[in-house]
Image (cartoon, rainbow, N blue to C red; front, side, top):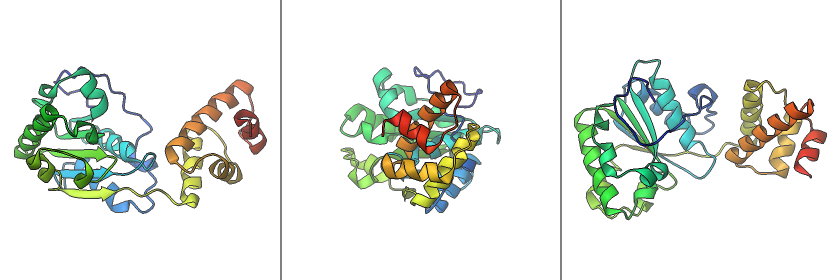
Length: 235
């Protein structure tokens, strides 16, 4: 979130510094990443809609767009709707249309909530009128959101819709090794493949495992090898 943002949001959202375009391994998602990069520069489609299952990088991409807006001197805000709805009402969106970029994640959370559906509908119209960019993240495509307000359901299809695809296993190995290197961990390809084949092919789960192994290796002063992974994970 840009430090110049003049709005008071009753929610403390920490955007991960690790959520960047340069460490988003695109795999089959090259066009989707390129469009998000254009949006954070104030170019391209005014509405982008990204959806996909856990671990494919929807939240990463939205946060990367916000992180990418700051060096371009553009105001940006990332809001996960599930957390926002727990502490605020739809009026919290008033005025946000003046930001250059707003990223609303987990948008499926508003489905069936009349007040939030109406609030997002009006916000959509306002940010559109300002010619500012809106990026939406969800777990399902627009037609499966279950939005009851027909005008809002229609508007969410006005822009470009991208289904983010999971990475092939070879790309996952490269991605995990790169993220490990960012943390100062020398992680061999054989160790990563062992993780993938014995734990989970979900990138979100694999990154959480990497964080755990990082902590354990620092505590034990040991390198992350297959024997060490077996010991930590009890495999």
